[in-house]
Each structure stands twice: as structure tokens, then as C-alpha cells.
Amino acid sequence: MAQKKYTQEFKDSTIQLALNSGEKIPKIAQDLDLHVKTLYAWINAYKRSNNIPTRAKKQFQEPNKKECLEEELKRVKKELAIAKQERDILKKATAYFAKETI
Image (cartoon, rainbow, N blue to C red; front, side, top):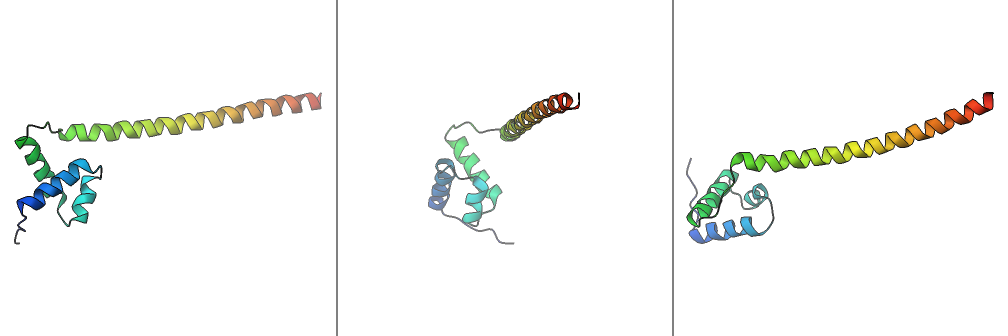
């Protein structure tokens, strides 16, 4: 399998696009027909050569877990609010029907 050769200009512009566009790196790699690991390697090499701190793999995963927990918390709070409304309605209905039967 032959490796593709990319010009330094292409690599530099791709790295700048990945770092500054706000677009997700896998999407950029797909759009440019690059393997995502190739683009990550270019970015990491650029950051090392320019003394820019790089994130460890574990740090990439933590925000995702935090986001998932925040989304779950929002969902659970919403469900709790609905359950409280239903409980209040059932209390009122129970009181209403209890008066009616007496």
C-alpha cells in the first residue's frame, strides 16, 4: 500500500483549519479525504514543535463524560418536575373524589 505524500503547505493549512475553525477534527479529515489519525499526528507534531500543550487521551474523554452527566441531570430534573406535577394533580383529584363520596 503506497503512502500519499502531502506538501508542507497542505499540512500547515489543514492544521490551521483544524485548530481555528471550530469544526470537529474527524469531520475535517473526512472532508479532505485524510485518515483521522494522520491529521491528529500532524496537529500533535505542530503543537510539540511550537510548545503548545497537548491534551492526554484521558482529558479528551472527560468532557464527554461530563457533558453526558449534565444532559442526564437535565433530563432527570425535567422528569422530576413532571412527576411532581402529576403527584399534585392526583392529590387534588383524590381530595375532590373523597369529598364527593362522603
